[in-house]
Amino acid sequence: MLTGSSMGKKLLAAFLTLMLVIFAASAAFAADWPRFQKDNSNSGVVLSPDSLPTNSNPNVATVNLTHASICGTDVPPLVVKEGNDEYAYVLNTGSDGTSRVHKFKCSDRSVPSGWTGGVVVDNNGGFQLATPVIVGSTMYLGISDMVQKLLNTGFDSSTANWTTYVDTGSPTIAWDANGGDGCVKINQSAGNTLTKAGVYQQVTLNKNDKVRMAMRIKFLKGSGSNNPSGLKGRVLASNNGGSTWTELRYVSFSYTGDWSYVNTDVTAFFPFTANETDTYLVKFQPEFKSGSGSTAYALMDDCCLYAENLKVKKITGIDGSNPTVSTIAEIGDGGQFNTPLLYDDGYIYLGSWKGGVKGKYYKIDVSNGNTTTYSPGTDDDGYYWAGAALVGNYIVFGGDNSTIHVLNKSDMTQVASYNIKGSGSGQASDADYIRSSICYRDVPNSNNDRIYFTDRSTSGSSGYLWCLTIDSSDGTLNHAWHTPIGYSTSTPVYYDGKIYVGKGSVGSSGGAVYCVDADTGTVNWSYTGPGDTLGGVQSSPVVYDDGTYIYIYFTTNCTNGKGYCIRDDGNTASLVWSIPSGTSPENSFTLQGMGVSGEYAVWGNDLGTIYFAY
Image (tube, rainbow, N blue to C red; front, side, top):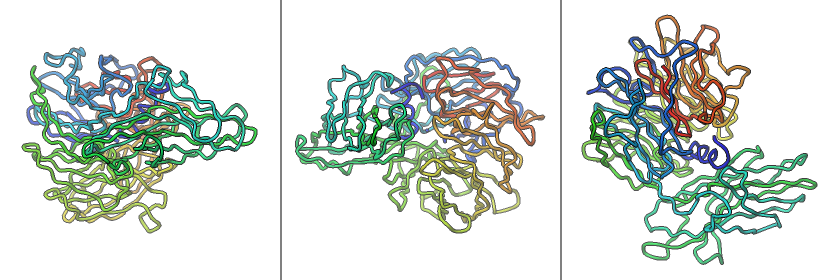
């Protein structure tokens, strides 16, 4: 996403924690568009009197956030009309470890009184992937509070708290500056001996810590060499000074020459010998073989071990000069809030993700913090960008276990479900993670309404756009159609008989936007950019109808990420504008999509650069 470690941390954010949708109601503010996907149906459609930029050369302004870092902005801004002016609210993760909400007047990018430097909502914020929601003059946020337990200030020669080691083989191992702010380089000469080497550090954990670890590795080969094999990322821990080691987690990889990740909840693997705390050595270890006559090496960075806590917060008085932050609920389950917030009638609904351990979906009473929880029946289920839609008396959402859940919103009990993975009719054998929110379509004069969503395979090589019917009276789900579009975490948008949706993963150059018939699943067109160079479209589109044409607004999550506007020309799509127009220092990975209101489209990126197009 950027270079070296900067890129990795954004990629890590995408793996850990990024498609993002927001649902809201607007009471005190003018009833225009104070949300990302417009409403609790998650269909981001904009109509007159809004007048988004549709000419080929729109006005562009930028703001660079003072407290920004490579974490940057991973959720869409909320763009709201207050009085006669539009304001953008931006949730940003800063280099100082804080999560802040910034506020800008869209017309001149000025900062209102009370918002200088942003409002700190959490001092241990880490990456934030849960898009907030605005209700009247209050913003609600689901915060993933992450307290880092290991020093990880950049792998370089000054990082004295890390110790290098060689377990197996005879590689050279050294700090390397080529990974941006530094990383570990493990170099293996030609041969078939398995190399196990890495770094370790001492950590003290509290008894009740909910602990997650993560690392990123890039396996590379010498010029003209064969692909390295036996690729693994392994993490181990010892509580007796290294006499014995317990394996916390390992992940096998295929050779790609790009950064790969290990990331999981490891709480259960730390048995405490003291009542409150215990001290461990923790190893981060790549494994690989170079092969006969070949050379290979591994780069390793962002080795993290941190304690997690979930918090639901609010900022009251956001339309005034004295915004106030308070905590509604603290939830000691660990994991991360990675779904957008759905607000309905005094309650917030959102889900958590824990990486290989079952996540949960929560209903939280905003008046007193009382929490009702839904927990799935399988350990591998979790909720990552999988926001819910409101369908009558039900909330509907997907998860990592390839399953659509229909819950009674009053008590969070499940009334129906549908698994898309399998060999039966209405399933796909390579279907897997559902990491989009649900787009709900109310079909007039019928109980057989429709929901739309996307999935991605675990390998990232395939994925589908899905349509299920849902009986709004009892929640029953049935298959309507599914269409292969490739890896997708983008939430579909329904408008005028068509579905608009993105596809592509982080860092990829094979992104696209599809226009699909909403009733049949037939692809009308796909847009892949000039020369098929479009980066991965993980963002959810915004669709604007100016009365003559339909325009689609989205962002790309790649090295030179941009904001785009394209036009639906019937059987094809054409580019209207892309911003920035070329490569620039501010141009970076843009996971989330755009927030819009009035004449403004607003988005941010990993560097904390906020774009205003109008």
